[in-house]
Image 1 (cartoon, rainbow over the protein chains, first blue to last red):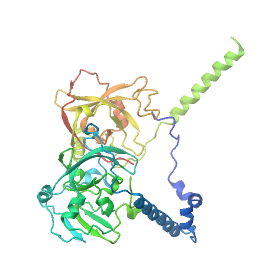
Image 2 (image 1 turned 90 degrees about the horizontal axis):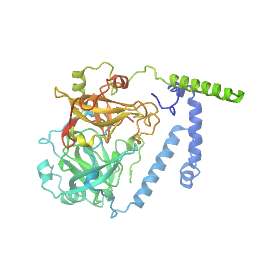
Image 3 (image 1 turned 135 degrees about the vertical axis):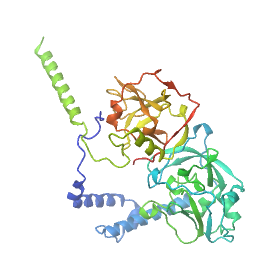
Image 4 (image 1 turned 30 degrees about the vertical axis):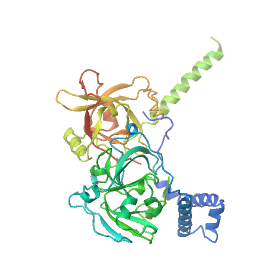
Length: 257
Length: 176
């Protein structure tokens, strides 16, 4: 039985085509209302809001401005809350931009982690060499931009320790990641050096299962879930903005918590 | 009986009729289902094959009790609540699910409340027909209509799987 709070009739999707002009006007009104804030007014000065690309550029500029504010407010010494083991969700929630049936497991023996950019020792890493590095465990909340969250228990090498070990330029702006599932991502150096940022190899003290990023994934306590790439194959340190999968589709880049 | 009382009685009858007509009008009609939605008439082997492709993960049986069974659509509406797991004589695992009854709070949209309404009942769902969706469970191998058509499950008619036992269930991403 359907809930009485749900609409009696689902609108025909074709209605959007029939009323495209009206929808555009509504979007413009919303944008202008949003523009009442001083920052947005500054961004919109001289913009022609009837031009979709101009609106897009204004929104992009606003998002970049937000990224800057978040970066300025970020305290690299402040730790995110950690939780007791009794709250850990086992197994964790799966999410990706594709269905779980399309996950392509990695051959851990053949897998190599390549290094690129501002790193002095670019020799590739195997699973065994990574396992020899000191580990840390964190029990943190995973927060998804979709509105759900869970408590997860992750173990792995602190990214700071790894970057120091390979002689990365820690004054560079960005750390970028390429993955086996074609999900590029990047973070700011301050977050990369945060104590709760791990190159995770285990969940709940067990080897990472295939769908959660085996053999290596990123886990951060201070960013939204979509900033944590799985199945990492390349790490690059750079001063050139690398972007990311969702960022190129309009999501914010900093995505701090 | 006064005229006022008769008016009240007639008014109540008309209001009841109007509400029940409205409820009838909400009955959903057939619509094209996305790929991840359960296909009507899916056989047990087909269900098992699809479940095996969802990377089954270990989960403690005791951690499943109380989870919501969700419909695999964007709204992820609540279909019922898991009460436990049982094993049939042939070894097949089934999930005992309490379906929402008339005026159940799941039906009203208050999914966090346990009361399932009048006429709620238990059914046993094959474990191959469900997948883990984080802290919930999603119905993947049966349509909601087939779920509701399942016979009522009688506790004690199958062996209860102890809470400390671990089984493997497929996983699925959110339907947003």
